[in-house]
Amino acid sequence: MSQQFYDKCLQDYLSKLSAEEMPQSQPLWEVHIVKYPTSNAAGSVIFKLHHALGDGFSLMGALLSCLQRADDPSRPLTFPSVRMRPDINGSSIFKNVPKFFNTVFNTASDFCWSMIKSSLIEDDKTPIRS
Image 1 (cartoon, rainbow, N blue to C red):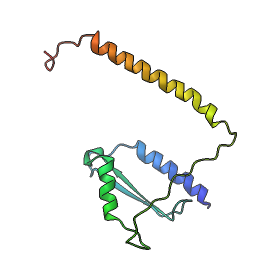
Image 2: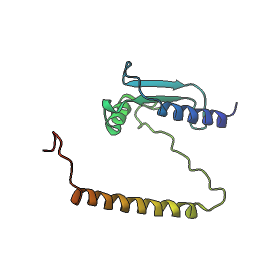
Image 3: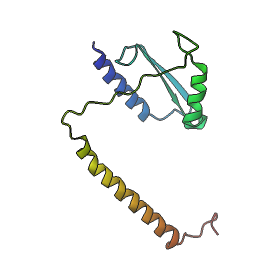
């Protein structure tokens, strides 16, 4: 089977894995080892960690401090970068214009709604807010 097939299978597996909730009756982490070659590596190790264990930055720091290169441990650990997909029809700029205006509109409407809620609409009386 081709590496592109394995790439697709790995992406599908990652999508499925990220959509699943962490079981409450098991540890707050999972480690998945994929031994099939992709276009980026001979195999993959996938760590799925619950956010209660720590934020992404500190978890990545802890993970990277435990790993070293197999070919030369004195050199820093590097990872393959994500490749940009080639634009087939050359219209990527025009494809992003509606996204830009949508983002600006959503940001402005959310900001206005937050200002209206915080200044004009009064909160209900609750045990927390007396």
